[in-house]
Length: 114
Length: 114
Image 1: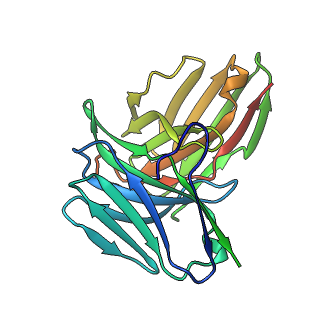
Image 2: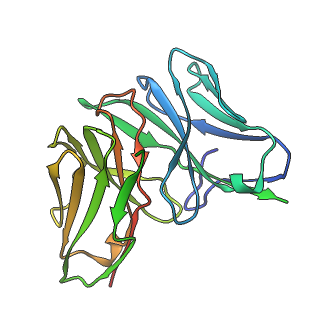
Image 3: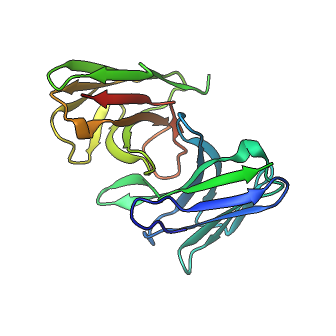
């Protein structure tokens, strides 16, 4: 999702439902993408990554989909649990200037209702 | 050990104070990073060290001074900060600063400048 002003995009789901969090990236030269989960008061925690030569990757309860044509990334969480409540950031790694940099998207706040 | 540690967890300082943030990793990573994160915003890159040499400075004001004494340690020296510098300061590390490397984040130091 895209943020407007200072507001963080939010997604509210019921426990047990599947969640889909979307992200648009900007650098067509980015070749590596990561999803991070950040709980309140903590640093970002790695969830799953995907390289640009793939369009899908699965982990435990999570799947990342990459559409390079429209520069879109999504994170699917199966059977969402209250412990999944957090802010989720996508991040793209690509050359900007003469260095590789990790650039974070705006983030989505996921709230799981019991 | 797959952890990045940061001290202190919280820091309150006046605008005339000098303080330092510390970061440590024992994963054998050769790239270390400082990020700044304001509330409800994504982390923003400040500095990158690669093999103990500063490789990226994202036009950060000189009141922030990074230091990498050895491959496991990263410091951020603070002097004459402004209230708008209040934020969560995150340290991260990765195997190298190349593109296809996951960055591991520490829990951050919550800095308040009075």
